[in-house]
Length: 149
Image 1 (tube, rainbow, N blue to C red):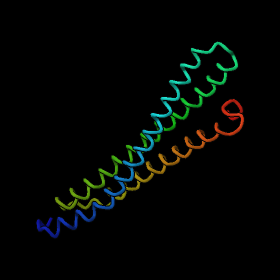
Image 2 (cartoon, rainbow, N blue to C red; image 1 turned 90 degrees about the vertical axis):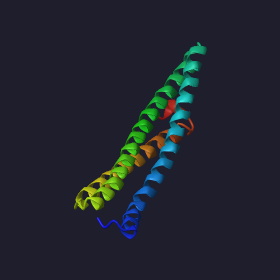
Image 3 (cartoon, helix red, strand yellow; image 1 turned 180 degrees about the horizontal axis):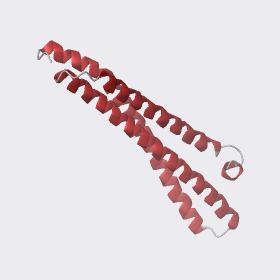
Image 4 (cartoon, one colour; image 1 turned 135 degrees about the vertical axis):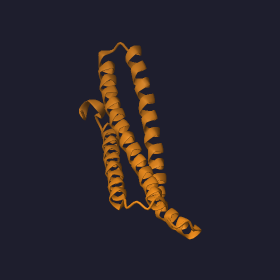
């Protein structure tokens, strides 16, 4: 590695793109964790409704909603996991760029592999997020939970 400031600036410029991707992933994680929190809060409300009401029809609807809420929770939790994996792979890309340049390793294939894996994890997280949103909006239609299972 050329120890000049110009060479270091060049490496930093290479790392900027993945860092912006990392910032976007962080924002997406914030949105998903907020949704997860709201799902959990609603599940707690529904569980207390189940305990409070003795009517079978209310309990049946509440149990059906609870089932959907736990399914949504599972999906968004997996989306968060894929998002975190994506962020970790982006971090590995940035570290690889610096290490490869500093020790003059030829690791272009590794960097490409890590970056493609990060994007595949992010695509999976986005698809899971879309599925969770579809489930959430499906229960808002007439008939609600029981009609749309």
